[in-house]
Length: 194
Image (tube, rainbow, N blue to C red; front, side):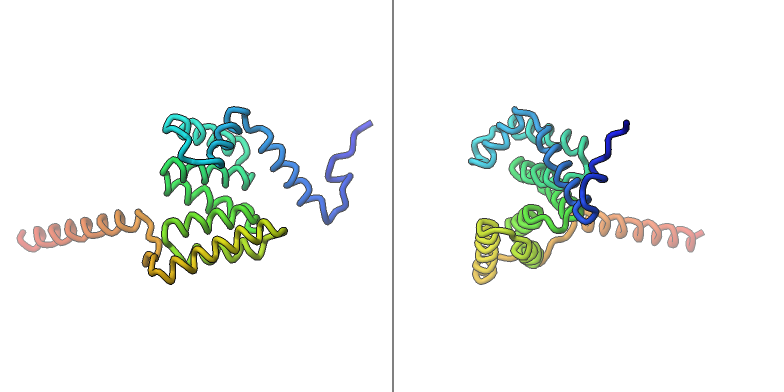
């Protein structure tokens, strides 16, 4: 006799959310004890981790994300570890993907807002922090979002803000376009001379 699947045992409205929660918990349970130890130390004080430990933590979390690419929480942890390891562009991408995978995730929105705040990109920081505040489900989460929003307001009042985030690719693509224009002008001049 065939066993019923988990989807068949759950009410239809709750089934997708319940399965996501179970898969997230299972993926987080797969994090090795060594990685859990390093994560605990990172949360206690990021400055405690030496460079080899930070590199090891990032590598282990990358493996976890590769094994479970649809688990938003793992991407949040990887994004945080990348920040601690000073790999900001990769952290932005991981947190952005985490928000894309789970737009209703409090922690994904809060950490994306925190990263933008630390990078002084206030409009994006405000947007994600506000989203996190709306998603808060308890007083602790509300307080975290409130404090982050207050920090953003204080920074804005003090004039600590960048003009906006620009991708490093923008600078590279601009230089390539200039080079191509120069080459096409030289070719046109050479053709006129012949």
